[in-house]
Image (cartoon, rainbow, N blue to C red; front, top):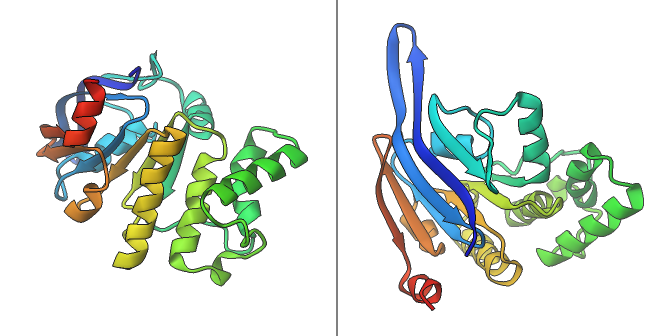
Amino acid sequence: MSELIRVEGLHKTYRMGDVEVPALRGVNLTIDRGEFGAVMGSSGSGKWTFMNILGCLDRPTSGTYFLDGEEVGSLSRDEWAHIRNQRIGFVFQGFNLLSRTTALENVELPMMYNGSAGKQRHHRAMAVLSLVGLETRLDHKPNQLSGGQQQRVAIARALVNQPSLILADEPTGNLDSATSADIMTLFQRLNAEQKMTIVLVTHEADIAAYAKRRIHFKDGQLMSDERTVEETRTRHG
């Protein structure tokens, strides 16, 4: 498997007045293309700081972050914006859909930022909405959709620019247990059939259990990194 993410000696320290608060303390990690990993840890463990750095939303204090072989942790804000639009798809707990626009229009939005033609946007958005099982809900606005359907729209939006990486931040946090299971099964299917690389942040062990790899943070450090038995067998042929 080819490497998609590599971080080396990753440190992040926040300054609160005169006090320095270390959020990451020398993290080294690689994630290969096509992996499905869950990043776990309690509040203050560093998992969200790590996710924000992977998503080019925050800059490490020191250390390096490579995405697709390119060192991206030190790039400019404009370069980060381009990477976030083209190479990273985000899925959030709160869905973050535009309330007055349809499912189709919400999914088309990232393609508008990169200048895709209207017909191309339309066909691509229809294709990814079909992929997540919403081909009959194209013209529905968020208030006409269930929570699970809204999250499926958000997943389609994350997929529409064919990113290298999907980052999901507590994607089932606003959903009931049955709907959460549906969404996590969808992530599993996208990983297995579409070979999507997915990194999920969660504090819930039952949600992390859907992933093939579980990465635990504590006090800003990597405490454990385990793959499922099947994934280990697959990787070693």
